Image (tube, rainbow over all chains, first blue to last red; front, side, top):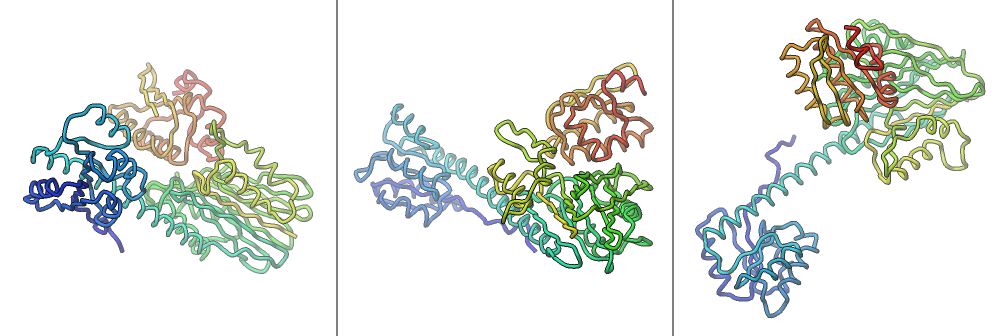
Length: 386
Length: 110
């Protein structure tokens, strides 16, 4: 387990770049009584970046007039190197020169001191700039760790998703691209017996690990079929039982939407119910049908009644079950939402050789948003009934 | 997001403007909590200015509605755009809270 204490500790560290040894000695002497400040001195400006990478200063003091290099040029070098671009930089000069000062700020310096500065002022500025920089480092580290934990959680969700299969007259496939903040999507399918295939997809409100945890809990209940007195072939019963088991007040005020269906192979019928969820698309010889029932979300109120409906499959059929993240795609530059009708047309349209409709949809989303992840989880299943 | 509360003779109107999403929801919850503490019970959410509502925004409205119901009041929703109305319909919220075309008709039904 990890905790907040695992963030790296950053000590106030000063790096002075100055060709004059006497300046180095003087600044070192000024800072020496400050036990929490570490001081490094680099007399050779050609080694400034190398030294900064090594000692990782929280503030850089840099002379502007040195024989080996133009001080303003060195400011540019510090600002263009990814190792030093964010480190506060205080330029030192032997006199007040407004034009030089302005130029230094323009190039990215953070402060300006006439050397040798007053000891108290120098320490105050070093502490001020270091504090801001250390806060930024800590925030970046926290964000990085959070992103890593979200990626780990997303990977865990992925391991719970079923493998695509082909057999018993059914072929399955899916795409799952979690959002950067991890939405609450999960889905699955499994044969209840030789005749009945259970298919479901759920979406917990909100994002983050909390939403993913609830999503996984619900998924495990469906996978293990652990709802009491519930026939998992009966969507009405399942949604009612889920609603009783997952009231939002008992689950950190989170609710979820779900599409739940059971395909019966001998009768080629699909009994389904949705609760607050977008419709599934059924595409067969009869055309394109939107499979949705007008049930409310799961978890809002106890003792809700849930209705189901049945669709008869006509000839070979394809079923798409998805979350809103699969079609609510914002198209730049106006960020308009892609019309649902366009999504339906794409999924119902003809297949192209060597490129599944799922890939086409994802390619479109990634291209349109110019992003490898979307605002919400992108989850979609394709079930083909032969 | 902007929230403005207006007291009318037969109810309290909350005008929303912007996106009701993860960022705005905590402020919305806090503001609505204050209005309920002040004694408001019959509330109209005027959604005219709402450009987008996320699942977290829906959750905030649901929690507000449940609080109001527990206090013996009513929550009416009015003036949703086609986009927001679509989200309401799919989520089943239009079956939970009465939806009206205008603030006046929402107030008239208290």
